Length: 103
Image: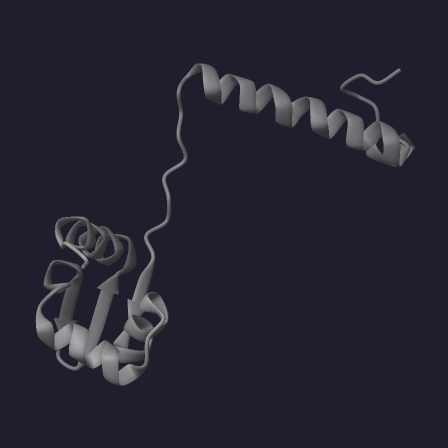
């Protein structure tokens, strides 16, 4: 039988994992009741290579995308450092794809 004074060393692996599961499930249930949502960490890409990786294109195409002004709302630039807010850029491009008629 476990109580608060039981030493972890005295527990078997099975007992320890069972207790951990109970605690985690109780915390998750409490968070769901409170409608608590963990904030997502912002994703950023840096430079032409970051833009290229985000959209799955070459660096030349990333340069063209940047210069076209399509994703200006998601770009910030300080001196020579280009920073892309990935989530915002994908949102902007998905809206443009919906509005554009593909023949």
